[in-house]
Image 1 (cartoon, rainbow, N blue to C red):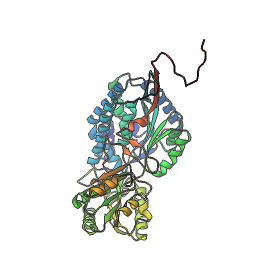
Image 2: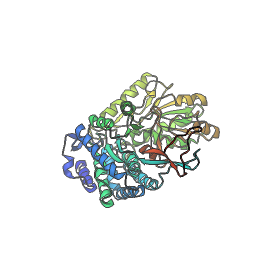
Image 3: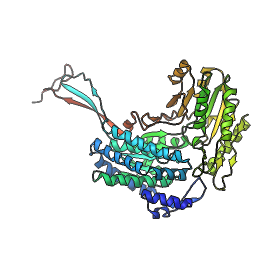
Image 4: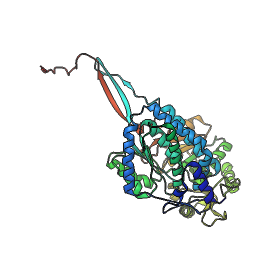
Length: 504
């Protein structure tokens, strides 16, 4: 079966009509082969504005539905995802180029956040607050916020939507989603899966609760600028975040920004080197380096440098690169030629700065328009040049260190830092890394790599933007508004001392 036919068959099983795959002018290519697998319709900015208005009307009805009942819709969504996990996971692999286990793993994250959100629907707790006034009670109440805009990136084409949507839905919000132009097919599949859940749920779910807007930058701008969208959750590059953040701030809207991650690991003298080696290799090479939590910088203590770096190079040289849909390849393709060109540019700059490169060359997978590369290790004399910038490709910059305080400073010296890790069996080093004077990232791990964020522990904390939090902990509060309520159950309204007036 050709890739085009397989894609069409998968989408048909998921509930997307064949007509939608040839209905427009947006060509969708698979990075696996580089071939066009569909052409889908895009919406205009005016159509997007109308969809947002419809989502707002849906919100006005959905907010009246009790939260546990809203949780039932998310429970049904989780059931539908379980029933269609294989098809959606396979579609992720085709559209993004992930190996099958990663495609399925992404759908599992969707299922997990649904499970989390169902429980959350009965735990949207407010506080009872001590008041100085006798005969009064003071409390906080959480209310639905409104239309939640979601802008997602290509690298996690379905999980990011679910992290936001599952929480937003139980909080009483409607959702408008603009997926990446590179991955509209998985978004259409999610829309169809959600429609199945709504059909089972019944009439309590208003029309327009989820809107999917396939389109370009103008559609994203319409979502960011619309006055009826009080929150936009945007995932992508720091460049994108710098454009989105000020526009939202200009109208006092909220932002959840999950942006770039020039993430680092530190290997200390006491580290379990076997454990560190496996974690580093997985964190740096997985998904062809196209995760926001990919390990991109590695600081190794000079006493263990020669023990771990040669072994790491051997792992890089032996890993299988190829078609993720066939055989046992562990690393699939880059998303497109622009990603490949960006990787090569960074490697040339690293060489010019004194770096020694292992790997990084293009791999012939039999498809001229597909871009497969061997992951690269770059031994650098210092943290400079391209090391300071995030390149969305499998490049790991490796540097020696000798002083712990100095390496913490180097670790924190970059702008885009999402995740971090340290490998040590020294409790003082571990605790210092996790302390206020340690890692400045939203995720800080000990003896585990930078990737592999788990549902339940809020993901985020992008330090350049003040961060955003998704998929766990108290992240739900971003999707609601809080009111403080005071109830007077006394017989009189106490006034300030010395104040009185006649009401007769």
